[in-house]
Amino acid sequence: MSDEPVRNWSEHHRIVVQQGEEWADLRRQYPNAELCVAGDLNMNLGGPHYYGTAQGRRLLRAAMAASGLFCATSTERIPPGALMHPPIDHVLLPMAWDSRSTVAGTWEGRVGTGPRLSDHSGLAVAVTL
Image (cartoon, rainbow, N blue to C red; front, side, top):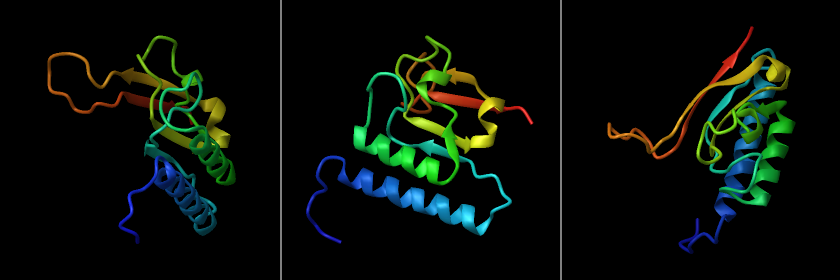
């Protein structure tokens, strides 16, 4: 490991590829299990550019495709006007669930006078079985 500072988004791009490889490994190890990935992917998917890089989005989409996943929280799937900015936290689900999943709820991360739980918006996804 180098003590040199990481340039721009290069570390993020490396990690996206690494995570994609881990998802593919999980799919191979557990072929009968449904893989769901949720968390801070540090980029918006869909809609106008908000955060992340074009290369990062390409790498993430390739990793999702290789593992049979789609993004249930891409900008186009969120009700218009529900969030001030496109989310950078996402829920990735099996492709077979695409038509059975919806964004069921959203909330802003920096609103109100109560305790601030996060600076990220929140998302809830519903899947009809």
